[in-house]
Length: 351
Image (cartoon, rainbow, N blue to C red):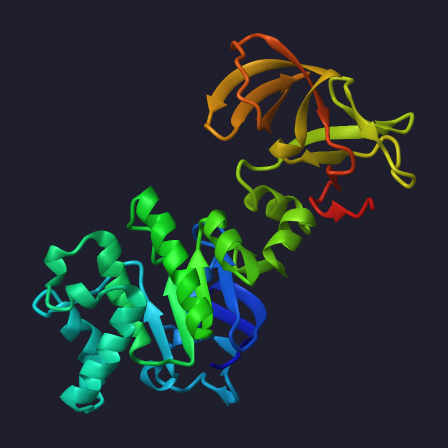
């Protein structure tokens, strides 16, 4: 295992700077996800750590070595890509052991390491097969096995689940998390899927336009997002946002609906954004009147799309409710579970 540190890393392509002074500390044995929308710079940062991309400035440290000028093969890392990149003419065992063969290890040593990795990943019965005879999930496990046999100090994952169907994504996601718990190897995982980030990571780094928006544990980001961007990105369905102002001590939506009591310190005639997660919107006979726009039964919950005085919001309720589009329901917001953001999108700490 080894720590990974990025210090004021920048990346320019010609005159265009895509990574703007990013600094990240990743402890030994930590599982960190880099998450954000397409084009935010997360894969570029991973490639900079691996050495496949050169930083324009700043330092990259793995363990106690600054590795800016160290070639990828000497950085003691192993990378699992979005594409499986398996050699079609080699068996599973040959694919997994190829890097060890290049190191000059004996056949007996390679066989021992390959069988050990195959045992961890449940690939023992597939070692003699060729990639064309494997499912997508099996191919991705072979790609992980190829990384494991190298016994690197750091694993790097570049959106490894994006080519899998929904069911396989869940399965392989669980396998990767289990693998990390077994091996304890420092891991950096890139994804645009916030569900993957929330369920797998010890720590999440949220990126936007080549800059860090927030770093923290998954539930910390969920419960206390630094700004409206993080609040919208972390959580599914996304947080509801309602434009409002303070009047007579209440947060009032533009249509005149009172949302909640405003704590002391909020100023009247200033624009705010009121945020509430769908699971904190409750059906309440004594609450606010809202019109049903769409009903999505999910089995364990029902997601309602509602019109609240001209504002579209989502409610995620545990009950299996039967509602008609166009009907009216009454809702309330769970006490103290809402958020407030200023006109710049920064979260205001209300409690």
